[in-house]
Length: 351
Image 1 (tube, rainbow, N blue to C red):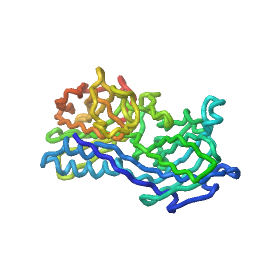
Image 2: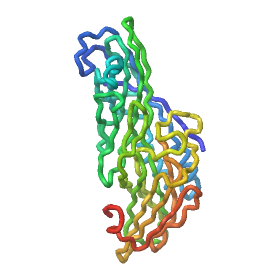
Image 3: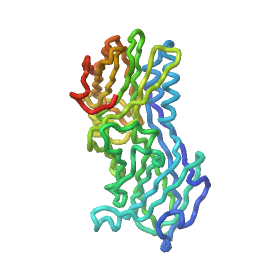
Image 4: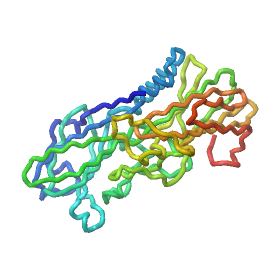
């Protein structure tokens, strides 16, 4: 299976060159050195290869086309806004963590450009987060201290899917008194996506709902490490495939636990999504089928391979009239079926 990555150079505030201390929120009356900082989105993803591999037959063309169109909105190197934080490494040595010295927030437009501003000469750790402005399920928290900065998902039993890709960058900066200084910051995707494609031919179920679980709930921006603070379910969004007997669901979320290096962002371009399965399930798809008589069948698909940042994983199943699904026939995917499931005896999901 192949993978791809793309580069886009971002423009801040729609201008080719922006200068002046006023671009950063704090008072920079003592600023001395001009700094030019380029931001580059590097999207490392298997989206096209995964759709081609899982939905490559001629009969799958309508499903593949609809899924590709929806996923292109997620796996996009288009960044629309950016948060910029500069942390004082010098003061951080005494305080135990670098404290924020300057902060900026900007809208992005265009495809390339240069962002110029002034900073006092010293060492900084620079952190950037893109596409956060319209990202209600995730917020930037504890951003006054460098190593505490965290993207945190809202704490609920059931959370919505992320609306788009999130990108972050971290860059040590040494600003000298003699300038100008030139820096390049690369932003990598920190979330990923799942899709469940269901062949419903002949099943005659009344309703289908799907959820995922097992994914990270937070991301430490400076250390590039994911956190698993609670165990929510992510409500999957439904996909329709007109002219077919299939329906689909998808979620956009943080990655799962990883079996190789721990759960971190993906910056490799050498087989970044090849993985060994774990000894226990790493994440799950839950499919609830309501039958004509009102009873509910619960299907749990247990996935033993990790889901990494930038990755799309597609699962395919066939649905039977009793609401159960056919075993997907993949050695790294298990299946558990509960007929006539009573939701009051299990986790709290509204269906």
